[in-house]
Length: 292
Image 1 (cartoon, rainbow, N blue to C red):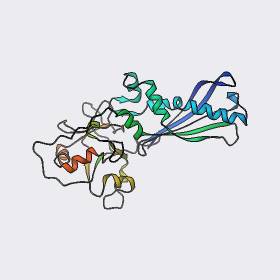
Image 2 (cartoon, rainbow, N blue to C red):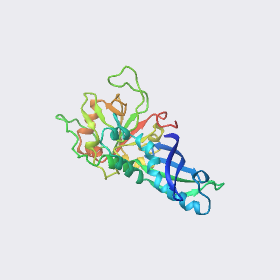
Image 3 (cartoon, rainbow, N blue to C red):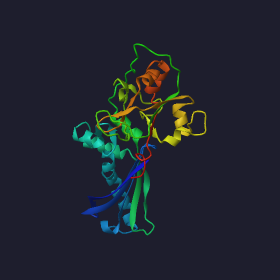
Image 4 (tube, one colour):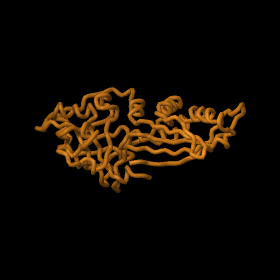
């Protein structure tokens, strides 16, 4: 569910008219189930040449100015799609340094606080992956999912659940793998026709995420639909459950489903609407979504 990392970052700041090297301790996590990036950052006041009580205000200002840079390593690690992270978008010039800093400054923050022994100051920050998705997908043009030439009889469903919690074959590779989460996953059928991608999703109706990630136990709750809470609100009382046949992509973030299952979605205007509204739940293995 969560991926943790801890790093030290040194940034120079003017303190009392002099340039001081501040040693920040930073820890962060990406929770794909909650769709949040969380980070904490802090430093020792004495090491920055600060003393209480006046040093608290200066410490808060230092954190306020520093946190977009401190969030940078975690933002860069976010997987965008099967062949891109935020870092690779930056390397290819599809994202600028200024836009990356904007993503950091869009973080929600808790006012900085002193440590229990009053020797340090730290702040907490949350970046919602919905905001990152909107920012990176702002140039996307919504297109209608393809209608099959030969529709099949199909029921109208209230959501789509893609189950990919076990190791699966990866098309074009010899060894199986576990599917990985990303902001813009794709769904293909076994004839390699695209069923769902970022162009077939229209943000706003159910939020700004193409899909919500969860684990297997969360789709087998003691309710008629097997869902509870936010997942029940998203996928409704009669979701279509589909087993993934294969994975696809440079990184295995994309899903290949049977052509027959794809036709169950595409043959109904109601079910195509589910794609457009992002009423898609993707079930991944707990090991992929577990603490690292």
